[in-house]
Amino acid sequence: MLLHFATFASMTEFSDYFEPVNPIAINGGQPFSKSTFGDIIDVYKEKDFFPVLEEAHIAIIGVGEERKAQDNEGCMHAPDAVREHLYRLFQGNYKARIVDLGNIVPGHNVEDTYFALKEVVNRLLRVQIIPVIIGGSQDLTFAQYLGYEEVHSTINIVSVDNSFDLGDADSPFNSKSWLGKIILHQPNHLFNFSNIGYQTYFVDPKSIDLMTKLNFDTYRLGFVQKSLEEAEPIVRNADVLTFDVSSIRQSDASGNGNATPNGFYGEEACQIVRYAGMSDKLSSIGFYETNPAIDKRGTTSHLTAQMIWYFVEGFYSRKKDFPFKNISDYSKYRVSIKGHKTELVFYKSHISERWWMEVPYPSDKRLKYERHHLVPCSYKDYETACKEEMPDRWWQTYQKLS
Image 1 (cartoon, rainbow, N blue to C red):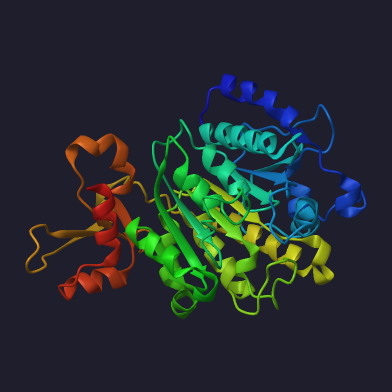
Image 2: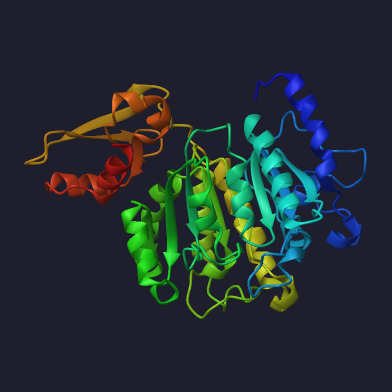
């Protein structure tokens, strides 16, 4: 990672946003086994010994904020509870370069905490370090999103959640209305939003209609579970992923005040975040709503730790085949659809076997939309086009670009 030293030097100033991790609370102050995350992660444990960032790829950030939590008081204690399990996990067949910056000092009011998280995310993005946020309540996604201001003109968000969290325009902002806050925020940098795993009985039909009108992508739990690999291109298109633990079934993650009988299995949740880690585009991820106060035997904290482990494994499995590095590394396919003037163009990577499709956009919007006209897709989308049917992903992107 070739970055000017002055960039990192200026970043040491934001150590004031953090308080060190208490090693006594994590492992009784005892050393961790060799090659475990607790052994290899550079952790902020003492004042004046902030982690070295120059060689880091990933930065763990704890945010014990729950003042806007809905029916999940106790999630503020998640960061250290998750660390307790995460640090005991062994790294895989890679050399991890991870720092743990500690926990963001809670602000006098919640807006102060949002500001701190926004600043930290922004500075990490500027030096190409991926923030891995351990919340706290999911309203922190709003601050995670704000961290992209002045970094990208438009971004894509994917939320793994059993509902949309749109909220009501007349109600106070909280962990169940963060998406509505993002949509209404000006200036707006949201290009696309995708929900993975919503359960229809938790969603107002009017909200589904609104998502359709906004050309956002929503995928029911049953659809995703039936073909989990179809979640991969959805996640691959994201800059931001926000994961609400309530999307996991209660039997696998009881440590959440909003847990319900249905939801993803633990291994499915791990696979989804592994897809996120593998995506060359994704640049931040947040794990929210784990609640140690009601967590039986620490199972949910342990599962959240394993999800982070899978994200890290995915990151170190990245193929770096997007954006295009060498056109010879791809096969190009053209498909004509009767009654449609434009050919559909697909690309298949020889490196990863993954697919993309090209979506045209007006030339005067090139600077704004250049990052979005190559849309991750699956082989099924190519098959659909070969049957002279327009893939839904193509139409939704085309309408947003036009």
